[in-house]
Length: 221
Image (tube, rainbow, N blue to C red; front, side):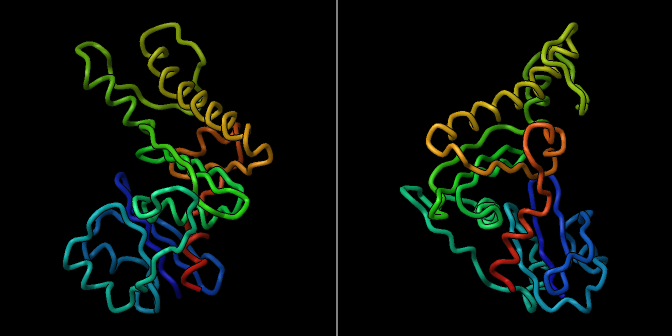
C-alpha cells in the first residue's frame, strides 16, 4: 500500500492507495507520531510520499523516513524559475497534464499553467477565502469576521453581504479574469479547480479533488 501525504498550511491530508485504486482519504488531526499511527493500514503501508509546505516534527520525520520515498517531481519549465515552485504546485501540474490551468483554492489560491509541451511557464498566487475575510476584520475596527457560505451575492445589501460579495464574488471574478487572459494565448486550455475551497466554485469549472494525488502517483508507482 502507498500512503500519500499532503501537509498544508491550514490542514494536512492523506490518501491510501493500493495499486492505482484509492482506498480512503482523510485529514490528520495534527503532525504528531500518534496522528500517523492512527492512520488505517499503517503497518501495511510500504511506501510513503510527502508533499509539504510545512515542517514535520523531528519525531514524526524519524517515524516515516524508513518507508519514505525520496523522489521529487521532475517538471519541465519554460522561462520559469522552477526551483522556486512548491512541490504541491508541481504535483498539481503533473496531475493535470499538458495545456492546463490548475487553480488550487486553499489557504492561498494558486494558478498553475502548463503549455502543450507540458512545461510549467506561468502562475500567480493570491489570498484564499479565509485570508481575505480575516484580513478585513483584523485590519479594521468595525468590520466583522464573516462566515463563508456556498451561495453568495454578486452585490451586497448590508455590511455582512457586502463582505461576502467582496470575498466570494471577488474570487469568482478573479478566476474568470485569469482564465480569460490565458485563453488569449491558449484558447483550448483545460481549466481545473482543486483544493479545499474548490467546491464553492464548481459552477465555474470542473473540480478534481484528487488532482494532487494523481500527480504524486505518477512518480511513486
